[in-house]
Length: 313
Length: 313
Image (cartoon, each protein chain N blue to C red):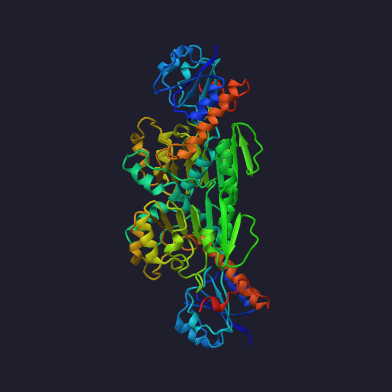
């Protein structure tokens, strides 16, 4: 009996064919037969509901199209199901967005553009250099590594923090495990590029924000709940020269409820667009890599990016 | 008799001492004796008026503190006066600003930040990647070379255009002299990093703008008059997906008169702050290098950055 693959996202015809060489393929929302969820062995998602997941009694492999797997309903995924993220699939796009946010804050692009539109060319205050500054990259996966590489081209002093010691050419200092305070201390800038796991939730609190320079910039292209929201709001209010530049939000379903953050003057905001959401090209690359990984699994090879259940439950 | 050095900008005490080892030093606006302008042999500027320059009958060397020398009153500078620019002194700062403008436009930071502040998280339109895109760097001096280096870290295809063929590791293609059309053709992005000379004034006209992609981005951190203003306005009106992101302006004394450009929706503006104007650190580095070059001259060594009179008159 052939494996049953169910995808909650639309596949391209050639991608579907690649999988059909090994398995039956069903796509959500398409015309034609729907699979019985209890027969599904392999799930490609995208969004998936708890109800759907509950019904998949014969599930063995989940391939997430998104880079992060934190939004999966982990309470409903049996321990024997192999779960693969799509880490790295959007690394270039997200790393570029991190620098767009960092540079917008450092060079005060929003402040100046708005004044110039009012005909006001008076030059007030100080812009900040990247050159020579201490940049702490929190999370040294594919995105963090790309950020570090680009930072070296800007001649920054790059400090990496990650779960395990990695050899990353672009990093001047590396910290791991419990040494996050040493990584953050004295940093001019920091970028949150960590996955959201039970270990990283709330990692950045008031005390850790205080380790950075008072005129620092904190960029978040990872996940909002890695930062304790109320601690951040208090810190931003107390330190008007500090800037929080973010693409990610606490209220996933309705981020407009995060107005207590985005209405602050020292916040630069984008609406969760660093990856695929506003780049068709990035989404297509993510889909391509997700399908490749499913084919890897179907061939009996070890898929890339297998995540540890215990990090998420 | 000792040489007379006159500086229209304030020197630091230690910088003054470095020069005093070789010459008498006078600073504009300081208490104490003023030099007779006719005795001045070496001018460090900053701004300088035509009247002042006219009076300096014994001038032999001008050291400009700014990177560009286009604002000097060239009609009043005798051909035997050696003029040194301060090219390269602000290269890191200006190159960073170029990427701040490019990324703000590519990732639509102004558009999205403004919407998020209104509570609107709807994702519309496409953001643009730097990765893999063709970036044409017009002007391969110190600033252009730094831009090219950083662009390679973003994995861009970098096309250089300059007066003379240079070996620049970071450039994938190099064009010179009359081949600017070939350099611009098909470019996603271009950065103007040329000096303003009689050769570069009006170099970018309507036809050359049309060589770029219709959804392209043109960044200007060089000088505004390198672009034909009315041609640019027409092109921006006809191509709403094209973005002009600029730090420099046509009306030097009163840039608020350039509202025909900065009021357009597809323009990102900063008020001439890429270099020293909003960075004390950058200004101090520029002053340090200017003084070093004056000392070089006083020691009888050849100064750096000597410009050709014929390029400016």
